Image (cartoon, rainbow, N blue to C red; front, side, top):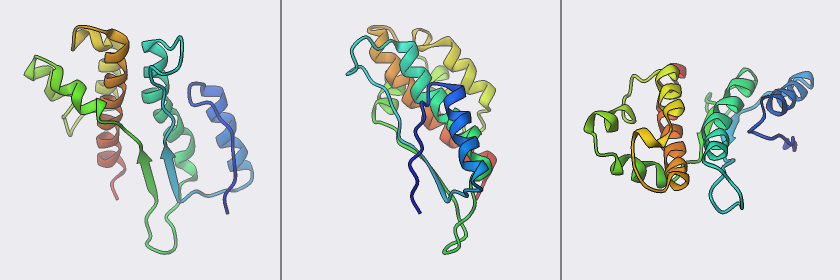
Length: 155
């Protein structure tokens, strides 16, 4: 069964309300798909808004909906999908410091490591147009968060 639940991934309250609504109905999910994203095509969008939606939005959704995730009967697996972008790897490729690049490829990164990079923003890594850089950073962090979840949640 497919149910439509409206939520705003940039809002803790909205995501929590949507998850609570499904939990109250005893809904179990076989998959969580984080497809929400914000780019520079939206007039007036700031780098902070891009990072909030593209990085923290995914974390909000996972944190809120993970308790509802249950393996499906067909193969015994549940799915967690993040829709990224080639902008993430392109962003990392532009980082001059090899040490900084490795932060984005660290298979042992913790959420605290990811949050530290998030808080530093793109200025710590690349120069130039910061709004475009924040989009790339948001997608690089989403990939790093995906690696973190794969390690911590396992099969």
